[in-house]
Every structure is written in structure tokens, then in C-alpha cells.
Length: 273
Image (cartoon, rainbow, N blue to C red; front, side, top):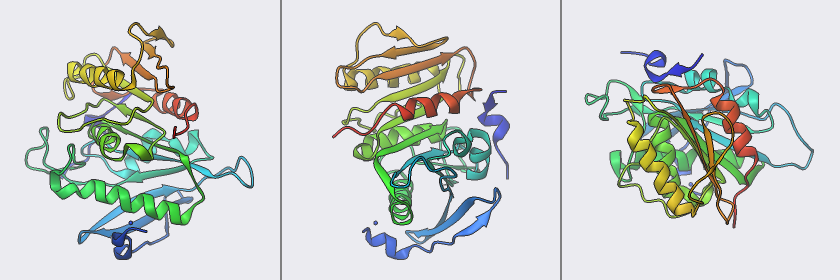
């Protein structure tokens, strides 16, 4: 069953900043996950880290997936819904927790979410990402050529922001039901899988199409594209940074099979120098 943001909502550095981190390796449910706590600009932040549950080789370094929840969601709900820790057991999977956020769908900021543009909320979430990435690098043998970002809805919008502001970090990205906001400037070509619903009215489908077109222009893809299955089109790029679009007929949902598709896509790409 496809999951919608609405149905999953719940009411009601070395970096200098690394010195301000308090990391608590408390085991939480599920039992192999680790809850990390940080203080960033005086605010307590949390992330749920799934270490690899399977090793592909003794000397192998680990890929990392950062996955961001929707507005109104939690890191625990994202872990339960997206299941990247199960689908790529050799990877480190990081689910970060957003803060109460005033955005266009929640003007009073009753629910948790992410900044959408550079400078918004004093870049609290970009700073948080930098701290978490530094902590993960300290804790695990990270494969620097295999760091990825994905997210649904507001989490996907933040994924676009990470591409624009931290593009050199990532091998590929995969936003779902999301758009690139105008103040986000993409300058580093990256493989991207964008999943969108044709009936999406929360993040309007036309804005998602515009974001895909901007990605295609940056990546220098071909004009026509080729089918990669039902609802799926691949726009190839001569420098190995394709744009893949999956346009399903539904609305603002995280569709069934999305995580499997994202993992398959990520496994194809390493960061290019």
C-alpha cells in the first residue's frame, strides 16, 4: 500500500560544532538501531542510525543513506515506512529528526519538518546534517564515494537543498513527491531519481516537472529519454549523471516499491571526481 504524508502525520564539524555534540549510543526499537543525540546551536537534535547488519567483505567501507521524513513525520516513522535498513543491509542508514517548522502547509509550525531554502531558520538543518555526517564518519568506515540522500515531501525538498548546498558530498539523490525551491541553486551534476504523483496537489506536479527539467539541464541529458519500465523514463547523460523520473498516476504518496527502486538506483552510482 502506498503511504501518504497525511496518513503518516502525527498531531499535536573536524567541525568546531562537533565539540558541542553529546552522542548517546542508546539502543532503541528496533534493537540494532542507535539513537544519537546532538546539541546544535543550543538545540537538542536526534538521529536514528542503523549500522550495517551485513558485511560484503572484511575490508569494505560502508555506503551511507540519509533518509528524511515528511512534514509532520518522525525518524521512527520514516524508518518503519522506508525500510532502507532492510533493503540495503550493507549500508549505514541515517534517519534524522526534524523540528517544528513553519512552512506553506503548516503556517503555525505545529509539526516537524525541514528548511526548504538556504538561510531559512538560520540553516539549522544544514548545520544538523553537517554534524551528523561528521559523527557517522567518526563511528564507521564510510565509503566517501557512496553517500546518498533521499526523502519524501518536505524531506525530499530538503534533499534538493542538500544537493544545492552540499552537492560534492553525494553520489546520487532520490527525492519523492518534492520540488527544488527557487533559491536553491544546483551546480554539481548528480544522478537523480525523482518519484512524483501526477495528481499531487500538495507539492504541485507542475513544480516537480520543473525541478526535473532543471536537473536535466544541469546534467546535460538527452531530449527524448527511454523507458525503464511502467511510469519510468531515463534521460541519459554523457558524463554518467542521468535523470530518472518515475511518474505514477497517484497523488502525494510514497508509493509501494519506492524504497526498492531507490536502493537499486543508488547501487548503480558512485561519486564522480
